[in-house]
Image (cartoon, rainbow, N blue to C red; front, top):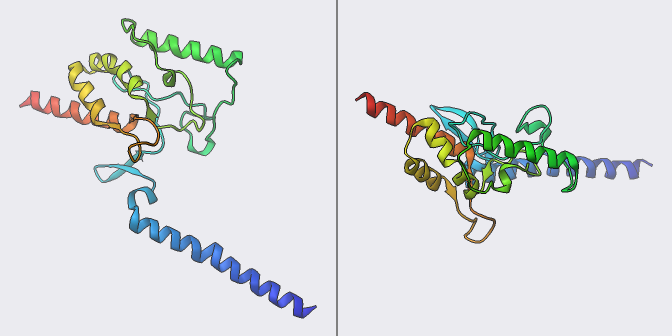
Length: 199
């Protein structure tokens, strides 16, 4: 019996050390060397302090900010501890009602905007944490944001263009706009304009 137990325990301890300790340490170390920003959570740092991650959306409701996709996470929007979609099918009355409410909210916030509302502004992502919107969704909001900030529409549109990411490797996915990065750029631009006016 001992002859069977000793090799089994030895193999268990060896594999635990290899797959539970050495392998994770090696992968983490390689990632920190080759992709330090991504390995650390793609954090966005302002004034030496992390203010968020480029991979997780944040909730913006003020008209002076661009709004991201609706979040279906439980508890609060963009709750990383409860990632998930609503799992409502396209014919579910609850989804239809939620989309109608989101359309009404967008129209109430910008009643003069006659452009078609892009679908990603009224439907939640599968994770509930998506930090991106389509360029069309950003373009839909440019007028509202410009008025709320008393900025020229062209300046806001330029910031949208600067914060639009292309397809990965030139062919994967679709162009997208990181809402959090764009809103931070807007705040920086607004601060620069105020300081310029003070001078």
